[in-house]
Length: 154
Image 1 (cartoon, rainbow, N blue to C red):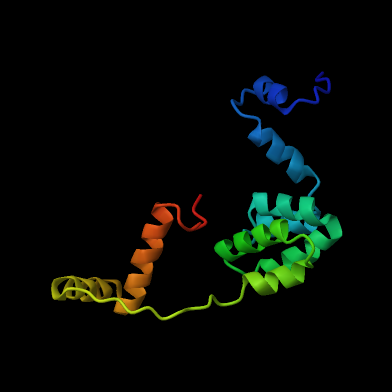
Image 2 (cartoon, rainbow, N blue to C red):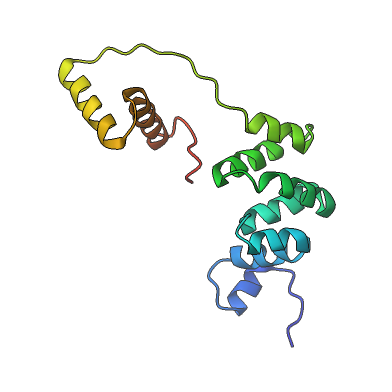
């Protein structure tokens, strides 16, 4: 018979886990509404998304919001959940609207030496995209690698 310990780390050790994060995830998932669990089981939501929705919004509102966000790809759902955590004064629907807006673009002129431009055009052709798209990819990747932007990969 297991007594209540009140300590996730103790429970984790008792079950043979090095970290208490699994136990925290299990206990957090326990209170997730069945409708959201079904979305998770169908692969429409991740377990951490289900737990965050329940914790931030409560069970009934979490179900409503989950129904709205399952249509978005994972990176947009992550952006939406981050927005809900940051902008708590806004309704979830407002955050969804803001987080799913197309990004604003600003034109930038860049001059390259001929050899670099030729290499860029070859890379773009190999990737099946325009030179502009390849430059955007290269810049985004470099900025993320050097921690100037959050690419959502962490």
